[in-house]
Image (cartoon, rainbow, N blue to C red):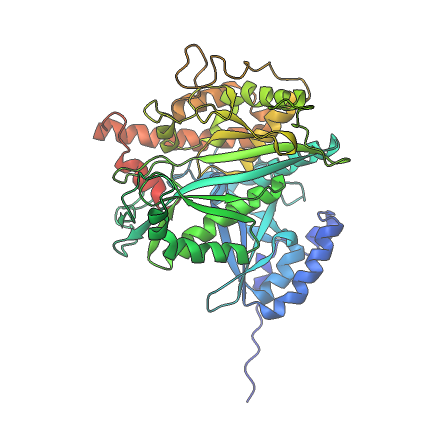
Length: 507
């Protein structure tokens, strides 16, 4: 007896539009070739997670059967714009039923956008009973133009500008995060809702901390981090190291240099996979800057960056002769980073909690806008010389949107290279570190950063719609925190229960 053959004409409604990729010429030769390889591999795949990074830098996805994905690959897939409209606590921040004020007509009524998988990002996720693949998509409006609220599209535009100048950005990730052990399996749904986050995961530290790089402390996390590292390597990520930082169970993970888009895609995959891999084993990984844990030291995201010439492959930051430090072009790039620092700071430190790390009591925090050679108290640290010369920007928090954080760096640096930025103070001068006198402080709160963002030129990077949308998202988050603070009167400098509920689980 044969199994019944079901038909479902309505199922086609989930597909973006037939021949969407071809009709709008969305792929280059590399992606066309990659798509053929993907199609040939689908016989060995059960499910495909189609993913995009939302404005908060969180991965949003749908899990499709491999059969469904065959049509979605070239046609795209309809997605709700909800992730563009909700703030970090899932409160509606953009009025999609009224005057949303962001200049994107298709947001009205929460109309769908089309997500097109990028076949260059397709890869199987090792492990698990089902053979599951992951692919990152690009967001488009229904007329085939890049979605104005797409973070990945912003970084693509900046990367294209570098190519037009005969340049390529090279970036390296250093990411700090916390590994803890779950003490219960409660999902944290009690009291949860739109703009109301339930109880944060209840966890315990894995060691006492505060013995930097102590081998015994790494040994206490190694039963989790060693197999995790092997998992990341099987994903093709260019992992360099797993290291124990200062805090109890605080880990730093570093990666070899990559191109701009590959770096952002890798960061999205790394954070998402790390959280899910640990959760399945009874642990909790969090990229929240300063969690509400006993003796927690803040976590940062250091972004190493340099620029190469496409024609010669030479490092543009390399100083001539025997002198150390940066070339004139490298200094101009640093000028750009410093000139735009306050206006784009929101893209590197986007949460209420992220500013805890920038408090004066954290002696290595990059609190002042300046640069120096091999000085970990400066916002920009110049590292190495010759072919390895690069700039380490230390301001980012680990949960920042990777596309926007990286795009902000590359945009500001290119503005400096094209002589559109104000000169930076000399290294080692008053802007070099937190112990100096008159240097300008980085924003000290989300409110400060949001004000600088709104008053500045961020739309030159993001476009008016995304700049307006981010301002609304961050205003909603800030307003909810301030309303809670009026009721709870938090102690000065103390991480609050609101922050723990808002960020510890999601990030």
